[in-house]
Length: 442
Image (cartoon, rainbow, N blue to C red; front, side):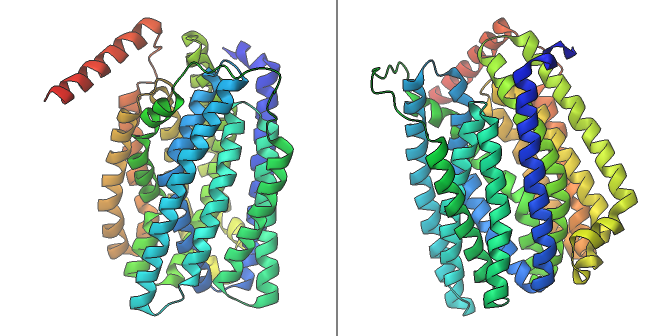
C-alpha cells in the first residue's frame, strides 16, 4: 500500500503543501494575536462579518469555476489546451465576480440606508473580493498542475502580508474596521502582482495551439451543481456568525469568530496539506483510469484525516487554556469553552471532504450537492435553536451536529470503500445520462 508513497514527486508535493500551510498558519495565528490586542471584539466582529460576505462571493460566484479548472487541467494534452482552459475559467470567474460585487454593493447601500452605517465598508469588501478571487484563481490552478511550490509561496506571502499591513494601518490610523480591510487589500494586490509576474506562463509562439475540446461546456457542466453547493458550504461554515449577530451582538460575533478561526485554521490547514498532496494525484489517476492506484491513494488519505482528527481533538482537550492564552488577547479568553465542540465539528468536516472525493473525481457533482444540502438543512435548523437556547456555546455545539450529518450522507453517496473501475464508471455515466434524459422527457 505504501509503495505509491515512494514516488519522489508526491513527497515533493507534500513538502511544499506542508510548508505553505504551516507558514500561513503561523502568520495567521501571530496576526490574530496582535490584532485582538489592538481592536475590540466589536471591531473584530465587524471585520469578521464583512469577511464572511467576501467569502460568500468567492465560494458562490467564483470558486465553482476555479474548482472545475483544477479538475480538468490534468486532462489537458498540451500547452494550447491548458491556455484555452485557463482563458475560459478566467472569463467565467471575472463575470461571476462582477455580479457578486454588484450584489454586495447594492446590499450594502440598502443596509446602510436603513441602519445609517458607513457604506464604504461594503465598497472595501467589494475590492477585497476582487483581489481574493485573483489569489484563489492563481493558486488553485497551480495546484491542479501539481506546481505546489509556486502555490505555497504565493499563499504564504499573502498570509504574511495581510496581518502585517492590517496591523500597521490600525496602529497608524486607530481602531477602525476600514484600516483592517485596507491592509488585507494592499497585501493581496502586492502578492498577486508579484507572483503573477513570476509564475505566469509564457506562450510558445513557435507552436500552434492545438485545441480539441469545448472547455466552456465542460467547465459549466462541472461547475453548475457546485454553485448551490458552495452556498451551502458557506452557510455551514460561516452562517452561524450571522445568526449570532442577529440574536446577540457584534461583540459576541467577535468572540466566536476569533475562537472559531483559531480552531478551524488549525484543522483546516492540516487537512489542506493532505488535500493538496493527495487530491491532484488522485484526480490524475482517475483521469488515467488507474483505479487501483487511485483507490489506494484515497484510503491512505482517509486514514491520515482520521488520525488527524483524533489527535487534534485529544490535544485540544488538554491544552485549550494554553492555546487561548497564546493566540488570543485576554478579553477574548471567555470563549475558551467553545473550542472542543468546534474542534469535533472541524474534524468531521475534514472527513466529509475526503470521503466525498470519488464524487468529484467521477464528475458526479449533483450527488455531492445532495450531501451538502443535507448538511445545510441540518445547520439551518440546529444553529438558531442552539444559539437561542444556549448562546455562544450552543453555536459551537451545533458544529458536530450538522457536519456529522453531512459527512455520513456524503459517505453513503460516494461509497469510498468501493474500487470503481472503468466498466463501473461507464455504467454510472450511462445511468446518469438515462436519468437526465428522463427528466428532459418529463
